[in-house]
Length: 231
Image 1: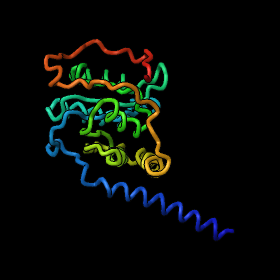
Image 2: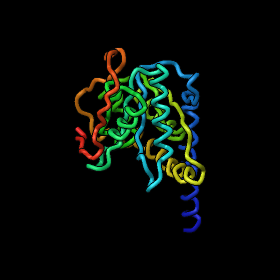
Image 3: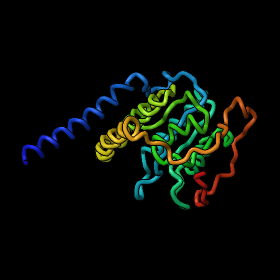
């Protein structure tokens, strides 16, 4: 019995490692981390996370927002989609990102909020099926971008990943360990359970410079304490 348990554990660890390394290898040529390497595309998709971890600011959030803003301000994208969780009246990732991007000088008309990005799979699939985007830049940390690109490739989306700075190692290693399990689940969701987004809904228009060229910065921030529907 001990031998069987040990063999099963080793097999499970081997499968997890294979998913983790195989996923990274499969998307390795689609990731960049330098603005000079970016070829202009219509939209950048910023994947959501919380602005704070406890009482301290979340570096994952800050670096994603900064990179997304720079992609727009440098003219490398025409608009931004901010996709995240809209769990409660007091927790709304898309509206928080929207407000912070506006404070960086991004016109409100060029920021599209996806309130139903509950998981990475939801954010990627909804960018294609709800917001009509078949080519975009995914903005997040490298480990997260790799998984997002894996999902995008499965759905035939022409995406590249812009990898931003990780948190200091004392915080990052815990997140990276969880990512190993998240990658195994992503493989299971796509190839075994055929998992779908929680919500889809009607098509929505993405605000782009070319569609709304005269837009100016809207100084009226959205109230983050207000509730927003998830469709």
